[in-house]
Image (tube, rainbow, N blue to C red; front, side):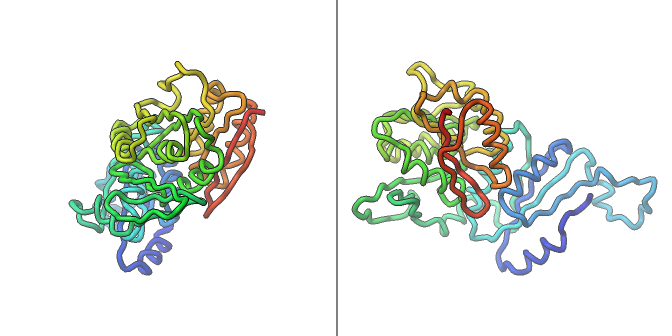
Length: 320
């Protein structure tokens, strides 16, 4: 399978004046999972997998030399995106999902200057209103606060979470509803720290934020400091493995990850929840929502509310 949907990709690219290609290369056994991750970013994909080319049945002079010399043990998936889309957000999303699945991937950005790609998207990242009160303001932007608004200053750096992605917007909308004054919050897979900071600004008493990526933890700590949230701690943990339980279970847990990882957490997350706690899950494509519901229901955690946007689903869950 050398290429998939090439005509579709070329047509999509022809309609975009300024585009970039994000190409991720992994070991061949991880190709299916990589494709699933990249499909969360866009449907404009191209897959490069040369492992099924049989040289015994092919005429070598009719095959491109680059294909003949390609590493058959590795495969790539390319996503084609408009240049104005926040590239740092997208790349961080991919990097975080790969890390959660323990997949080593080489990420390339093609079509934009390598020195500028991490900052070029900032021109398009503007103050973003989410829900009824939250406003996510880039650290480099000026914004005049209006009465009743809750302002969160954000510089995502190389971590996922600016609020522009549907998964983040959906869970922040739920946070507005379910964050109670003084509640204890756990944020699993914190990325830029945006959810923990949102909960803190909405009145949470204390927040514990964790991520498997040390870079994300450093970014989250910087954002926590920028927003003056002294009640948040950020640490490295592989899902729930290193979570602090010294103060007992939590009132509210956020997990904006992906369906498969939430399902992996399902047997353990109940032990971190108070009897009346709420679990907010997001990062779920709508087609996988029922899988997540079934996995959590098997451990007596059921849906209290579900919301969707553009093919993504977020849910508030509670103990049965």
